[in-house]
Image (tube, rainbow, N blue to C red; front, side):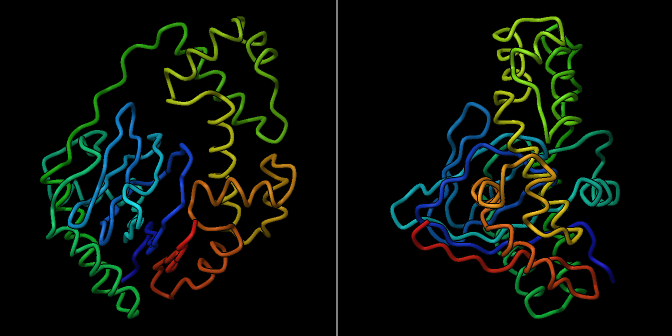
Length: 278
């Protein structure tokens, strides 16, 4: 049975610090050793052994060690389609769904996440798929809920959305903030403030994150890292390497090599990444 739409990451970090970034997928990270601290919205939260960090798609967050010895985690990145499919089968939730809390204390679910990884490492896609669905169903029943519908957009929020669309379209050659504001008929400071309020980060930070996300899709399609760097607007591959590692946790070359190990059942594993000194 194919296991689509899932990435796995087993990693240990000590000095690693993830810059503010987002994911297109959900994140379920079971902490097995140490403590991870991360900013989620305006809060600084911590997750330790037996706990799971939960991040919804397109939600800005960071990550760094919460104790001197760092942290080890096993992470599942299920896409929104898989979450929706499991929700339709298991819980009475309709519409957009997500997780309300960034950290939950659930040792049993954390062990299930570890077992998903172990089954994948053994090449047992049937077990990995079964365990994956069990843990996601459990998390949805215990910690899932409907995402609040967006409020009507203010003028500032509409400007932020238009600015985001421009940056998405012109990612490789974006305008300056001043020129972007002029194109939208607003002031640079007003646009900066509205964009941060709408997306949790200023436009230049959002653009870097969006470039990394697009580069990741290009790498998935087999594009060499140097070509992916230029295609998304980075000046060269070292520039991509730096930002990709800060957001994804592994360099683009290592990420692409791991993706090349995709098995015939469709299971994708980002690998076992060890970074003892950051």
